Length: 118
Image (cartoon, rainbow, N blue to C red; front, side):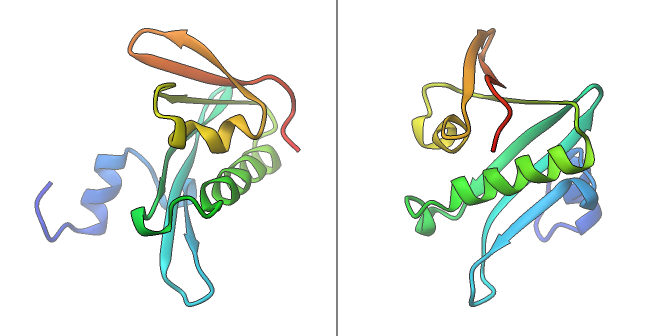
């Protein structure tokens, strides 16, 4: 994708829509995180949880993961699923705190909830 990119080009690359994308802003209005909750029947797939590098380690990943999970459960009460690499501890930590469990698959791990997230 070229720069500057149009919003349409970004959505096409993300294979998402505005309804599936969520942003996290700090009190000053600065964008500090982004994530997706995409419906792929019968599940909602949580994807692309991204926290600004300068804001990592402050619990923002857990806040954003919690909001994504809440949104998924509220609007699509089926299952939750996500894929990630289990060797990337900072990336999977927010989901582990919600009792997701790793299940090895080819090229990474799929994380599935052990229990209904709170």
